[in-house]
Amino acid sequence: MDTTLFTSCKDRLISNCSKVIVGKEDVTEQIIICLIASGHVLLEDLPGTGKTMLLRAFSKSIGGDFKRIQFTPDLMPSDLTGINFYNQKKGEFEFRKGPLFANIVLADEINRAVPRSQSALLEVMEEKQLSIDGTTYRLEEPYMVMATQNPVESYGTFPLPEAQLDRFFMKLSLGYMTRDQEIGILRRQETIRIIENLEQVVSTDEVLQMRKAFSQVNVSDEIAAYIMQIIEYTRSSSLLVNGVSTRGSLALYKASQIHAALNGRDFVIPEDVKKEAMAVLPHRIMLSGRSHLGNMGFVRNMLEDIEVPLEQS
Image (cartoon, rainbow, N blue to C red; front, side, top):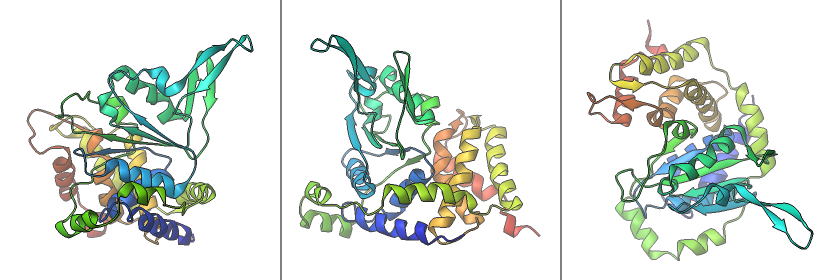
């Protein structure tokens, strides 16, 4: 398998997005993995850390139809899906599409909307279709929901239900920039102007080609067993209320394949699995009251406990 397309697209996208958000190449690479895997990404961090800017830069870099939705407590499901309205001139009902009818949907501050509105995304994220008034509409590929949310401790937030969290391929965090990186941001022109001038660097055809090709990345029996050992660990741990779903195990498998391809390999190694487990698994588990590790801490300790295949005698 030739991985040139993967490495080339990765370099182009990271370079383009770095014009907007500096020093977050690792997060950008994870968003690329979500795109290739036909998954959705949830970016959680404090307000003002650049979540929305990074996702806007990414959407411009891959082109396609882009819609941004600001989630608020008064947002209704029909504001997202669209409505059938009566056209008096034509004397008939017409369907007016909502912002979910796009290739890239930016759901900004998704946890500020009430659960009823959040649930409008469930069907579209899982099946890439919308059912409205008895009619089903298929959405054009590539299709991706990129959501931001403020930490659940923030004022005026509604926690996402587990069923919706599980539909996000990854949950990522930006964190603060380094001192030198932020000084560079202070001295340059406004970020919004940079985004407006960004060009598309990866075509829709290239995205679709990578989506078809990544399954050719070889996963040995030992690596597949290693992935299942990780998943089963979460399901048997007394520190967890619930473990990782089958959707989660598939996500880890795919993410490991794509990570390998983006790094120029046509085979998966344990480091691919360990790297992607930190992005794919934490939001899919629920800790019991006996654990004070936090989800990230639990996954990190788990990966240290489980023996890596190449280290077996």
